[in-house]
Length: 350
Ligand code: NAD
Ligand code: ZN
Image 1 (spheres, rainbow, N blue to C red):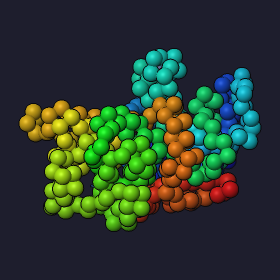
Image 2 (image 1 turned 90 degrees about the vertical axis):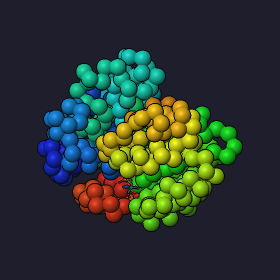
Image 3 (image 1 turned 135 degrees about the vertical axis):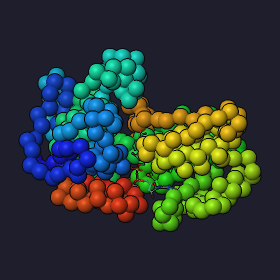
Image 4 (image 1 turned 45 degrees about the horizontal axis):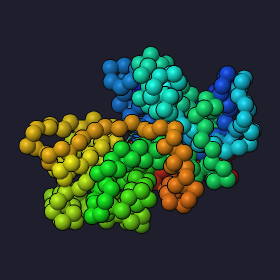
């Protein structure tokens, strides 16, 4: 089968012929419906190496950690799953027997350091291919929903969903304001999740006018960059600042923007992995403002994301590519030429 393989640190992946996987015990083989190209993949093949980034990400393996597919074959011991049914894949794979894994939060597995890989497509073969083998336990049913269009939900949907859910106490109540920085694959869905889960006014910003126009379509008020950006956002909050900020870029200036606008007792969640440094000091930020990172989400939350999708409350903004053009999708992502998610559909749009 054809697959996009990450072969060497700091090198673009290659599209090549590899052997079709065989599902091991407890696994299923999926015929891939959709594989989203995430900006984290770019960090994996451009920025990371032995000294920098999790050691489990060492090449070589098939990329693609944001997948959906139809069950093609059941591995030994798998029961209760029908071939042909459509599922979304929960990507993270932890040890399965610690407390975080027991609650479906493989991202925070206590034994992650001893695991040979982090997720499907992150250290072990992922779904940027015709077929992928995944643990049956990581499948979330899609029912009759379009599996190709749904693929981004497994990361570009789940990651903002988890970040927003952890910040919900700050956003519950009248007159609240949320700030979304970076309106790409994740940020566009974040705007929709905030609208679905809270009554907060959603303020959003990006360097690209077309990305902001899309966010406006989903109900956000947008403010472009520039010297008066922070003042204009503050004005929209009646001078108080935002109750929660979600930074999908993560460079020093975006973290600084979020921190400078944080209201007392607010939540700032940095999702983007650009590695920006923020120098905290007691008087430099509003009282009790909480700043945190975040990583992906839980299996249970992925069920909730699917429920929002099936209710029509979130719709990923996708561009579709055949598998033969997967590297073009990654190049366009790197060049900042996308305004939504590039989804590779190896078996067609369906
Ligand atoms: P993307 O390339 O689709 O979107 C990034 C957006 O940010 C683009 O629209 C771009 O124009 C905008 N942007 C860039 N610099 C900006 C700036 N200075 N100010 C405002 N906007 C700016 O990327 P994506 O796939 O949505 O991923 C976003 C980030 O989240 C990446 O860093 C990715 O690695 C990270 N990520 C983190 C997790 C996690 O679990 N923490 C999961 C998935 C992705
Ligand atoms: Zn675990």
